[in-house]
Image (cartoon, rainbow, N blue to C red; front, side, top):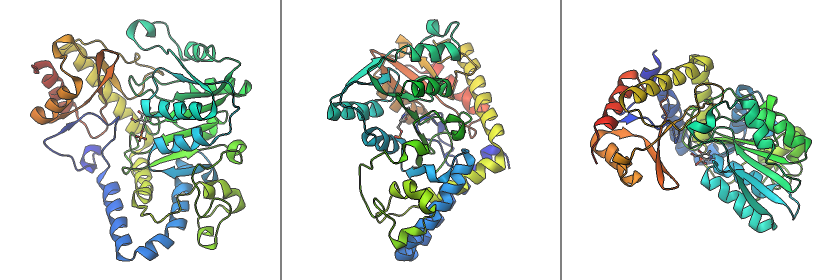
Length: 396
Ligand SMILES: Cc1ncc(COP(=O)(O)O)c(C=O)c1O
């Protein structure tokens, strides 16, 4: 079946904001609904059978991202997984937490809270973020620039794998090699990485903590994300919340799996009464990726992005804020909103949706607005042409 036909799309909406959350394939959404229905028929059985099913889910997820299931835990979003790292890792009571100026605000706030609680300072450094800064920039030069920001007092560095605003992809592996040498903890916010860039966690062994979303580029059920912690940090990471499995595995939870090796995964398991249908839908999501082919899906994402960029450039000529095509460009295309459209950006976003059925996202950057477009495999060239014509003809 053609990719687009595997989705139930709203014929009145042109959805070009998969960067916030993507649309689930029909098979994934149906699987989640079926799990929910089954749970409701007998919630007690549903809860008691949750633990082995979650373990099976972790095994399959680990296989897909080339990791060990014992090193993973599931959360409903990346914000929660990053909270587990940043709030739970022991840090000295002096020094700084370092973040780039392109990090996602909610995650910077986790760093800020941790810094305030631990008497650390929070420092922000500037990353290349505009057309004149991309010139002659290579991944190696970018890594060097970031490593150049590290100081003897840097304790923890938070970086996104793919930046939310402009889609800049960081050479995480190279940066991690240097942070590890210096004994600085590297926490990676992979909100936009799974699905959008090849991700093999076993190749990121120098990264200290990695969190990824499944409800963005992976097209997973809403409310799915994971945390990954290499074995060397598993004993030290303190859970910030306690529950049944914090200290040992009571009998009911032995079926979660993993045995003694899985103690970390058990410790970070969500164990309260909960209906895990969205997590169970992860297996159907992985089946979708296997059936359609990881490479083929990614190729299509970037094909549509190329088409969009060409159309935008020909029809509108707006200033592109994303890196040029190549290894530093992720799945998001961002443009500076021209002065002719300078309504309040949120008002513009609402009007485009209400009057034209076009869903995009606008975010404030200083006193400018940035428009971000992120097509996925369920979009078509026709839709993109239509969206560009709406932007071209829109009058505030
Ligand atoms: C870079 C980045 N980090 C974190 C998040 C937060 O994701 P979630 O709301 O799924 O936790 C986002 C969301 O867009 C993001 O772009």
